[in-house]
Image (cartoon, rainbow, N blue to C red; front, side, top):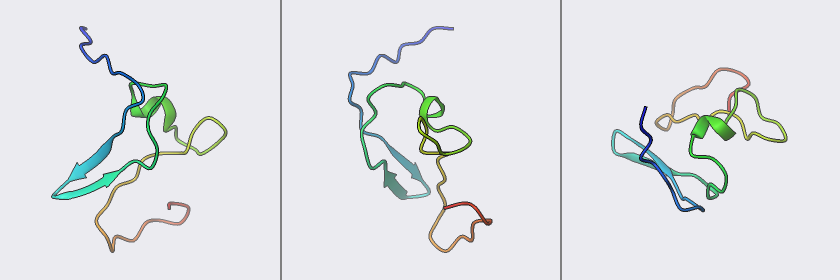
Amino acid sequence: MRNDYDPVFPVWVKVRYGGIEQPMGSPIFREGSCAGCHGERPGPDSPGPVTFAPAGVAFPPGCP
């Protein structure tokens, strides 16, 4: 597999879906993959998963 993605850090990102945009609150300094930092559970090395939904969506207990 060829990887042409060679970012110059820091990188600022945002998620866009259905006309809604949500920028990430801080820049990326170390990973080229969202999953490299956003693991299944929050902890010292991960802020937790990325969750994106339109306003008014009810999340299950334990989700932000």
